[in-house]
Length: 367
Image (cartoon, rainbow, N blue to C red):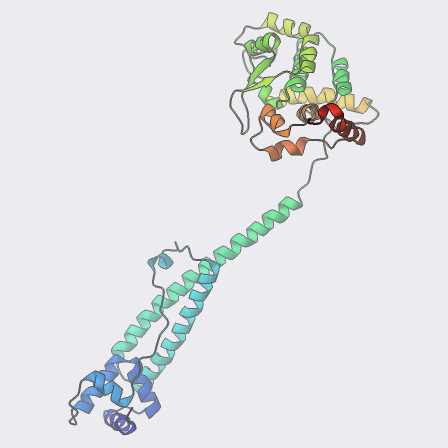
């Protein structure tokens, strides 16, 4: 850089009305192409015969680096997929650029030079403000989503949990049948419901679509097709265990009573007034739970039993009999093994000891 050339260029510029210092003049021509061109024209009028690039080198002009601005249209339409960190960095870059542009704009307005550039600065500032507002808006959305997620987790962790339900065992089942001995239609319907829930482990809502023909298959072949309410295989087959077959056989009179009233394509569970209309879930649930509450009050242990206790008892007993949780999962129709494991009761000390004894028996060792 030639200090004298810079001083001469500054003197020529001030002769045209510029009243800033030489340092401000240097900043101006480094940031304003119009001012640089005007200065070069004045300098050339005094006999300088080189090009503008040589002139810039002569007086030491260097272009200032301005941070690149992300003008991606996705920022303007709110569809940006940037991460929170990238949005923050973009916001800082925009802020820094705005500050530099304001400083340049103030210098230009102070000198009264290049009014066209001032208009451009206003337009760019407006665009930067718009981008900054969009970035801050997206940050607010991310912050709000995180707060809502934390609130949902807290609500779930503080939810009111139902007290643990006890599984149905043979003692409770027998008491349920004794409590509901009337030969009329509704008690008979309730006994059949309790029997099916016990031997198949199905949900109470899955009883409702059952038809008489399916019960006939259950009695003859030892299995029944179930339409699942939740995730799992459609038309799932529930097979009876040997104990389940005994329980069904003991209720033969109830089944025959029902078969005498209905055809094969009739729903099993209907009201006595509307024999061709499927019973509402609330009605069958109320009937079953009414008997269960009465039995629970009469037992010394006061077990907490509801209509879902049949499913809990079925899964627990099947696992204890087989020790194969994957088999239990498939038998009950769960889509995930984690769901099945939540139903299983812990083994007692006697059960654990009995199983260990079986493992330690010589006949179980490989030869």
